[in-house]
Image (cartoon, rainbow, N blue to C red; front, side, top):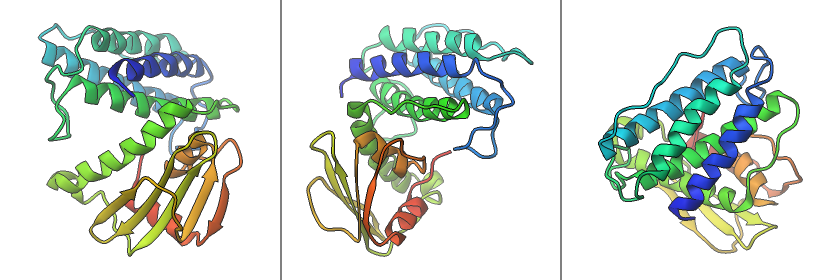
Length: 246
């Protein structure tokens, strides 16, 4: 996916997220068991404002407003305002605009757009699930999101301050087979990190389903459709030790 596609995804999912945040703020978020919808709103609001200000600084523009969330009221309008600032700053920037990021090899607005697209898609799902019904992640975005997971793990391995967040496998293999696209991945969870082969292959565990559902499973979220599982479930538990996401 290119920069424009990532921004379009941010626009689509933040609109749905704002709508979901118009629900009761004391609702529990099943996929974030320690959070209410208010906690999730604060998280995505802070995330969106933080990266907006990062882009503002990189582009040399004044920082946008970051108002406190109104207490005791639905958070949808408040979040829509913050998401609008993020979208405006990304659209006003080139993908190669130099900005701070936590990825040493990619200090660009393009990194921010991609990170925002995936963070907010997953949390849009969380917010909708708190209301009882969630939509799948766009298939192309989900495939790119799986790829971004590998980037996040690699960055964490390379940055000393993040290295302790990464678990280690013992050679387990996990095969992901998308049924709605041609995407396949064969992952080896070794003591040295995650090896990724983008091909068909036999793993200790195979997961077969729509790419959105595969991404949700990797993020420890419940799939919306059937994900067939063949083999040793311990490989998935090893994955959850390697990759964690709030």
